[in-house]
Amino acid sequence: MGKYSKLYVILLTVVSLVGVPLGTGAMAQGPEEEGDLAAGKMIVDILLVRPLGLVATVAGTALFVASLPFSLMGRNVKAAAKKMVLEPAKFTFVRPLGDL
Image 1: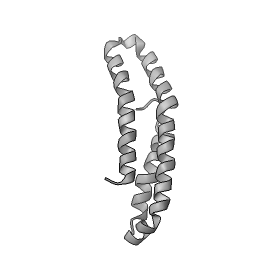
Image 2: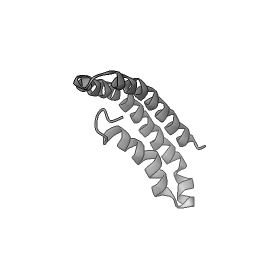
Image 3: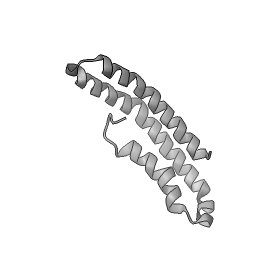
Image 4: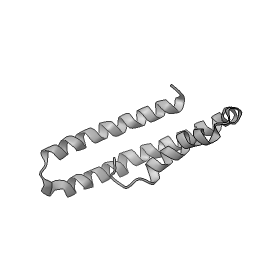
């Protein structure tokens, strides 16, 4: 498992641990409380998940730059950039707020 893969595993674990309590709360609540659940997911997203996504984006970018000579030799710069920079950046900046 590569260094950037470990980072994604950690990020997904944190997101999963945050999402599980929200999911169990949704099963216990009635439909009239859906707005509260959405607001809670947005709060968790903005306070916890987005900062972790930003850390993953910065770390992925640093790893991409460090691995660039090897990616150039292996001719897989686009694939490395997609996995290490673009995917964490999209997760952090493009997806809708509260969409965990």
